Structure formats: structure tokens, C-alpha cells
Length: 449
Ligand code: GLC
Image 1 (cartoon, rainbow, N blue to C red):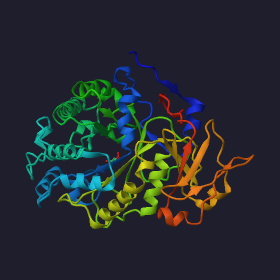
Image 2 (cartoon, rainbow, N blue to C red; image 1 turned 180 degrees about the vertical axis):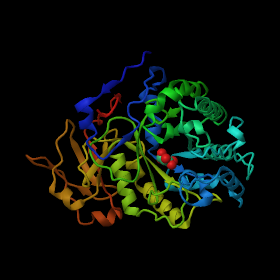
Image 3 (cartoon, rainbow, N blue to C red; image 1 turned 180 degrees about the horizontal axis):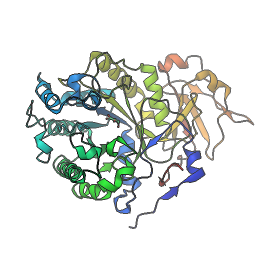
Image 4 (cartoon, helix red, strand yellow; image 1 turned 60 degrees about the vertical axis):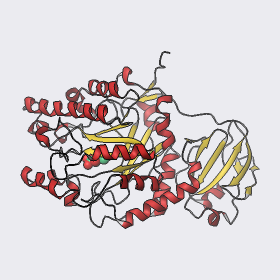
């Protein structure tokens, strides 16, 4: 069957769509129709909704952020010696997978190699054998992680940084072309190893921008990301790929801890952010853990606008997660075990969100209204849709009467609403007359202008 061509969205229409705090990285990547997956092929990812991101590497020994090598200009030899400090105490990546399950995550993304070039697997393609297999711990952590994920039914994501600071050619790709080509060869060899030998479900690139300038997409002339990703897909045909290799990717990315407002974005997208302050993705002592309420509101704001929520943790040099982070992970997981029906396997809509007041998700003919401000909600009217509300009730709670007025629909919340949910999000369940129609379109954003 011939694939339907996605609609291109540019100019004023795109600007209006993105009138929100959602800020997509790497727009305008190289197009390659052969790499397009159909919406059906990507659906599993959006059904998962929640993911856990893990940043762990040599920088976790220092606790000054994953950019420490570059920021502090640490000499190579001194930095490489950190390998002897990594993973010295008993630790198995299954522990991360257990934490991800406790969080309610249905996929994970593990950093297999960050900008410092240190690879966490037995990688023959690694330049100067800079791997956890040949140095320090002598372990193939990627293999152990993948096995643990598979056993737990967790989808497997691998983060891979194209950038490798060890190559002078990275900083001067034109002047030192030969050296830059050596770096590129390493990338092709390692992506091949990861796709072929570790069979990931998601390939999560980062750091395509050259010499720390421009964007991931402006360096596409160098990486030839269409060629790179065709090679990866030759081993994993359904592999989902993020937009940060210079190719436009299977979904869009919003990064960081900023609040999410605006309309539903009817394209696949994912928010990635840290569970702590966001000052560092790698381990940092005393990095404050975000509030429970704040996290739940963030998740709801993302999911009600069509996004997936990928939350990062930074284990310490022994792979351990602090009790504070663990406790918060558990609390969010408890929330999801109770209310997950309104998050997993849903789509955003049919009601457009009203910033900081409410948003909605749906599955077939059930709509979940996520109310973040009960007082303001009480003053608003829900718009009429081309579908009717047949009945409404609090999530596993009391029935709510539906008042149809000239201005719109009112759903008065009983005083017990807060206690009934015990969370910053009060959920109403609306049974609709008909199955709710998907709003999602196959659109390609081609740039911000
Ligand atoms: C940025 C940072 C990097 C981090 C990533 C996570 O690209 O450079 O350190 O790993 O964001 O998305």
C-alpha cells in the first residue's frame, strides 16, 4: 500500500500552532520519505506515554554535570582515569528497570555514550577502545540493561551522542576534515553495533551540532543522517528515531523543565526533562528533587497536549539513585497505578486545554477531564462538540450532573472532589455518545519561519 504523504506546515499556520511554551528542537531536518513510518507503526510509543531517561557515565564520578570534561577542560588522561571509579560497588542495571517500573514508565532511554565519547558497551568501533568493557568495570552495561528491559517488558531506548569531544575535527570540521571523518566513521560503526546487536526500539540521538554551533539540523551536511538512519533501520525496520541526528525524525522533542502551555499539538512529540532541578542531567549531589504536585501537573499538561513524558534521573558513580529521588519516583508511580487509565493509551482532546485550568485525554468514547484548578473550572463553560456527553462522574467516584446552558456546558464539582482524588489533578470521566475522533494529522513541520 502506498504511504500517504504528510502535509507540510510552514509560515503563519505553523506559528499559530506553536503558540505555546512548547519549543521543538531540531525543526527543519533533512527529509527522507523512505524513512517515514506510518502512524500505526509509531502508535505503541504514544500508548506508552511515560518514559524514564538515565544519564550515567564517567561524569557521574565527578558530580559536576555531564559537560564537566569540556567545561572544566579536564585533560584526557585525567578524565579517562575516572573509568576506574565507575561502578565499583555491586550494581546491576536491572535496578534501573525496577525503578522505571515503579515510576510507571513503559519505555526507557539509557545514555550509551555522551559527548565525552565513553561507551558503555563492548564496542569494537570505539576510537581508542574507550569503553566500559575495556576500561575500569569491564562490563557491557548496555547489554545488561537491554536484557533487563526485555525481561520486564519495557521498551528499549538508546541515547547516543554524535558529538565526541576527543576529536579536534569536531571543533573544526572543515579545517580538520580528515579527523572529523574519523569521528564520523566511529559514529557509523557504533550506530551499526547498537542497532544490529542490541535491537533497540528507540534510537535517541543528541549532539549533532558541530563545533557547538548552530543546531542538530544545520550539521546534516556532515553526518548525512538519512544514510545513517537507513543503515540503522536496515537492522531494525520499525526503529523509532528522534529528530536530533539532522534527519527530521519520527517525533519532535521539547527539552527542559519549563512549564507547558498552549494548544494540542497534533503531531507526535515528547518532552524530556529532569526529575531534579535540571541544572545537570548527570548525577549532582544535593540536586533538589521536584515537588510531587509540580510533576503531576507537568505530566498532565504534556499528555493533554499530545506529548509523551520522558523523565531523567542521574545515578551516582555506583549506579545508585538517592532515596529522595526514589521516593518521588514511587509517589508518581502510585498516582499512575491509580489514575493511569486516564493517561496510558489515550490521545489528547477532544477539548483544547485551558492553561493551568484543565485539559483532556480520551480513549474511544471515554473522555478524561484533568482539572488543575477546580475554582477556575467552576467559572468556565465547556464548549459543545459534535458529540454529546451522556454521563459524567468523578474518577471512581460520584456522579456529576451535566448542565447544558446557552453559553456552554457546566459540570459542577462536589465539595468532596479534592479528597476523592487526593492529587493536584481532579479527574472527571465523561461518557460520550459516540467514539471521539482523533485530532492527530500527519503533518511535517519544516521550520519555524
Ligand atoms: C542537551 C545536553 C546534554 C543532555 C541532553 C538531554 O543536549 O547537551 O548534556 O544529555 O540535552 O536531552
